[in-house]
Amino acid sequence: MSTDSELTSLVNRIQRLYDDPSTRSDLQAGRIRFRLAPAEPADPAPAIGPARQHLTKQLVTERDVATACQAGVTLVISPRAVLTPLARDKAKSLHVVIERER
Image (cartoon, rainbow, N blue to C red; front, side):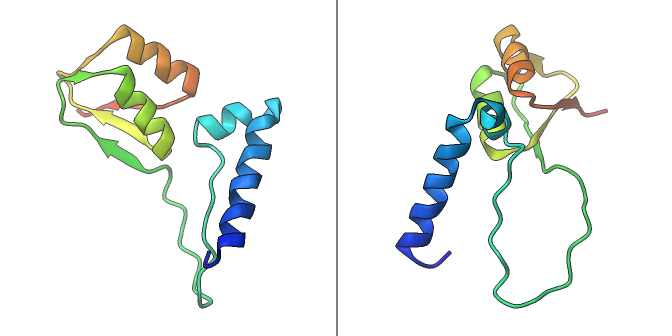
């Protein structure tokens, strides 16, 4: 993306996706991805699964889950971390995957 008109087109596309009830939850949960086209042809990278974010916090909150949703990542938390009830509910509603380290 290199021009203001390309940026405007992207924003308009995102708005249309959000306005459509059938795609809104996928957009909010980060399941719809946007990628920049490479400047030069390149070999496609192998799929390695969703990105993961390791949290070192001992208390995982609703805000942490919302941030992970916006980034489109799986949260990885320590074995001793406490997941608040609101965070658990938010993860379920936004379809954010939370994994505990072993």
